Length: 152
Image 1 (cartoon, one colour):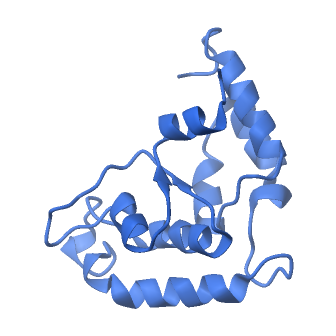
Image 2 (tube, rainbow, N blue to C red; image 1 turned 60 degrees about the vertical axis):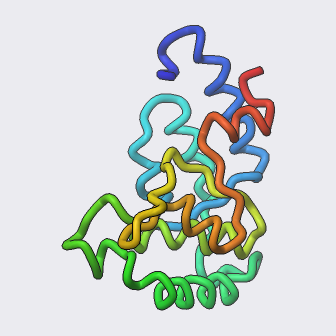
Image 3 (tube, helix red, strand yellow; image 1 turned 180 degrees about the vertical axis):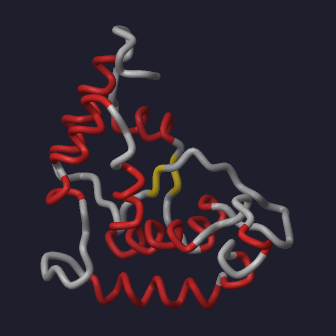
């Protein structure tokens, strides 16, 4: 849904407006990835850095609980982490993914990704799998748009 195609432009404008409400939160690791998004929406994300980026040590949110969740998840899901297993396989969850799940759990927000479950694999986990195990709502981008009424 490229924003330079006129029919999709209003969707990206609505999404930018949503970001500016402060309802979006991200970790540094994921924010750096988001900065690769181009166009007006990419510019909105960069301009909204102070609004969406939840930095550890910032007293405006419970970063200590976030750190506890993250450390626990690193231990609990260690065997599935791409950095430690599967020779760096991209087909399983990575440490960056755990940051956003830990943040979502801390803030009681959903995680939005385009990943699908790896289950019933005995050796791999994806974002939706860990979200489910952690009682964190996982939404695809399209589900998120529908729930928030963005673009309608």
